Length: 441
Image 1 (spheres, rainbow, N blue to C red):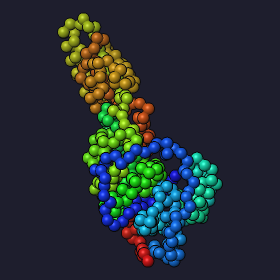
Image 2: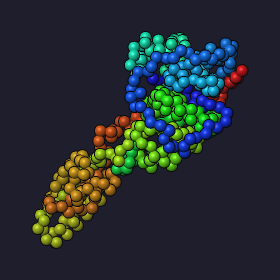
Image 3: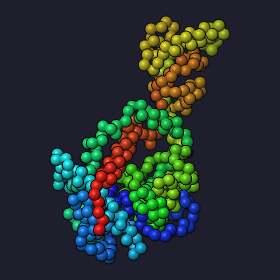
Image 4: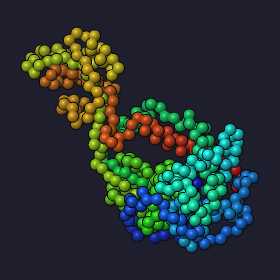
């Protein structure tokens, strides 16, 4: 489900601190993975809470009514499947208001662009995609929401603003969010270097303290979310509604995380949790994390390297003088060679052979080549390497993580660009809020 308007509603309980029953980061319980794949259960009847029907806030020249606020609260409850209680309803109300304020700011900014018009067909397509994710038809999906007290026109307006905001952010910042080839290649090298280290497939929920009234409120809210998920609320649904991390749009899917690349408090949780377990809230600077351990592995199955070579044939019976002469010749030639010219140079030099060895699993290379393949920097040419066939200069022209889960160049590029775009969008809405005239009644 694509709705992401309630990322500020994690502080479900305000007031005094909630006592922790285990150190932060340790397991709070085990989740049922099957619950994430099942279609959403029919919505429960709308919770019994009353709000005044008058104006509760103004955002520049637009109003937010008690009806608007109640509809947003019902949407969050239905989408996340978090059970409302007498204790958390007031805090949900307070935080839902902040989400509505941001939606009004987004709608006002969209209105400044006359060519940016979201059609009814686009809204219908969004609803159809949400219904498909839930395993139902669009009519069934809207019926599910209606059972929870959510008006269709309210949902459609919410989606219209979300679609328009995505288009506005994408159009405005697409160029600035692009990444260079150097950045992508650096990320791929980092992935390759980390291929043999332990890795963790995790789900994450991040509660940003500044958005929910402070660090203690974030911790309290995280405790309540953990309790709800242990009792059966689907992790992905909760993440979509409550997480402030960029992964919220993917149901909290943070992908494979390599050991040593996260904050120490999070690394402790990754080392401690077993597959299927949900962590206790993990306080970090600026907020609180909840981690769901989906899978673990000792490292990527393969490390792939692209090699080219220049060689002088020398039998194992060659004498020391022959080996020395060949070594001197290759050593003299080596500074002039690159991955781009090594094959051309070898064909123009008498007594030299050149070949493109293609991409190979490092583990399958000859032992003499393995050390070069593992340690040499991409784009460099090795010192002469002796094998039973002769003397070789080995050019390392590419290296990447192998296996079914290894990301491609395009996937890494898209991931980095999406991260940049999310950062620019957060900065955009923060600036709009700082410049707005907002009055809460």
